Length: 201
Image (cartoon, rainbow, N blue to C red; front, side, top):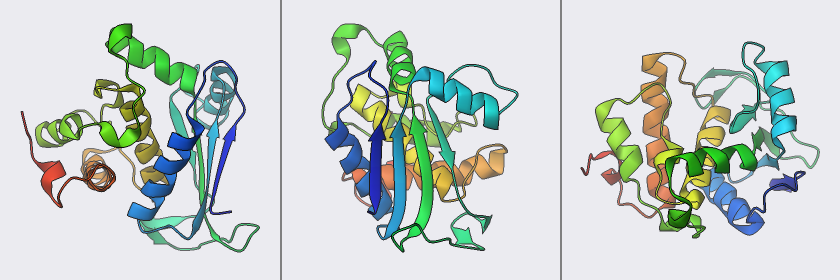
């Protein structure tokens, strides 16, 4: 199976079809449609355990973590490309914590403004604005999105771009990652080529 979506938490209802479609479209837009990807929707408790194990200087849950099974010599340059059990090359695993995501989103928006629209309905304006202004080292602000679905989409793209070998630990790396994320979000949301990088304030 090219995409496996696992939901192991029950605290928050998630739109499985929308997540599956968004992950499938992101993988295809990135040019890796034939690679296996696992998207795991987990509890805050499970995410906190992952965070503690793999990021020992952090505490508690986070919104998203990505784990690649292989080494990259540079973004999107694999020095190895292990195959998954079904013979596909394995892109890796993304873990998302919806309770954490929705708490953070609601802290930025009034409950009445939260929309669960399908992912394609949101604008690239918050991403392009951050690209134009430099923002911080986080590539995009998912919680500045106008809809909760948009926040999930930005986070999912962020996680998959990490699997492609991009990072945001240093400003130069973050700039490359921003550009790739904006490109993919533009493709997902039907923006004309290049338009996602324009500051539309």
